[in-house]
Length: 214
Image (cartoon, rainbow, N blue to C red):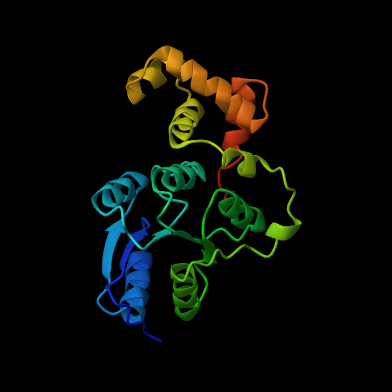
C-alpha cells in the first residue's frame, strides 16, 4: 500500500472543497510517507503554489473551482508547467470531459466517486511515467478542438483565455504587458492553429471546453 521513494514526494491538491482536499491529502500521506502536500482552493492559488514549487511531483486538480473557466485552466497549467504531471480529479461523469482533459495533456482522469485505493494506484502509475488515457480516447476523432488547442503555447493560451473573457486586443496587451501588435500576431496564429476563421468562432469553440452543468 505504501511507497518508500528515495526522496520524499511533493504533491499539490487543488480543489475548493475542504473535505475533498482532506480526503486526498489523507490518501497521499498514507500511500507516500513523508510526502510534502500543498493545498490550493483556486486556479490562482495553484499557480502561486507551483511558482514556489515548480518541481512538484504531481498536481491533483479539480476542474470546477474558482478561476478555472472550464478546461481553460487545465490548459494554462499544462502550458506553464509542462513537466508537472496533472491528475484531474473531477465530479464530472461525462466521458467527453475525460477525453478533452487527455487531449489537453492531463496524465490521468479520476472521478471523485473513485475509491481512495483507486486514486492512490492512479497516482503511483503517473509517478512511474504512465499516461492513462480514458477508454473512449482511441475512438475519438483525431482532430478534436481540444487536440488542436493543445498545440497553443503558454502565451497563446493566456491570450485565448482573455479573449474568452471578452477582452479586446488593447486590454489583452495591457494585462500581459506586451504591445498590441504582438497580441494581434498571437490572435492570428491562434485562429490558424485552432482551424477557425474568426475571433468569434475561436471564442465560441473555447467556451465549448466548459464543463457540462450538473
